Each structure stands twice: as C-alpha cells, then as structure tokens.
Image 1 (cartoon, rainbow, N blue to C red):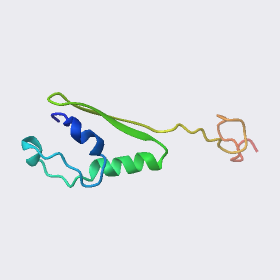
Image 2 (image 1 turned 30 degrees about the vertical axis):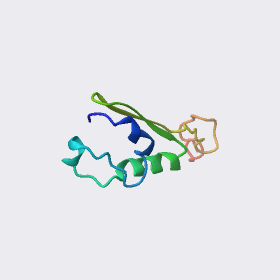
Image 3 (image 1 turned 45 degrees about the horizontal axis):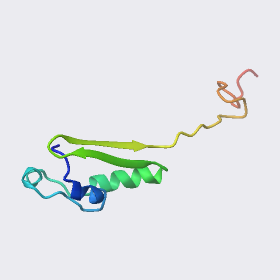
Image 4 (image 1 turned 90 degrees about the horizontal axis):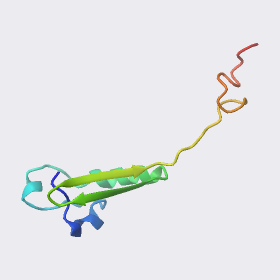
Length: 87
C-alpha cells in the first residue's frame, strides 16, 4: 500500500474503518479485515500492531504466545510416549 495517514493509525483495527482517499476509493473492501485479524490474534493471547510511513507503505506485525505441550505420559519430546509402543 501507500501507507496510512497518522491520524488513522489509532482506528485501523476498528470495525468498518477505512481510510478514505483517492488511492483507497478504487479498492473494494468492507473495513473488516484488520478488525477480524486483531480479534483472532487477541483470542489466542497475542498482540498486533502496524508501522506505517505515508508514501512508503505499512508493515503489520503480530505475536502469539508459544506453548509447549507434553504428549502422553513420557518425558517431554519422547516419541510415542503413552501410545503403547514397545509392548
């Protein structure tokens, strides 16, 4: 894209928000994409943000927490732990 005007940055993750200028009028959209993206990321315990420079473009970032799951009853990382292998 062409970047997001600074006065719009606090609002871009709001439902139905669209930047209205000559460059964006030609692009179809509902203003829901970033709202939905934020909802999904936050539902998984993450964070989403944008860095934007008008005339140069925007970069969107997000983080999600890493979770380690122990599989079966064996030590973490043991292949086949708790699945009856080796009987």
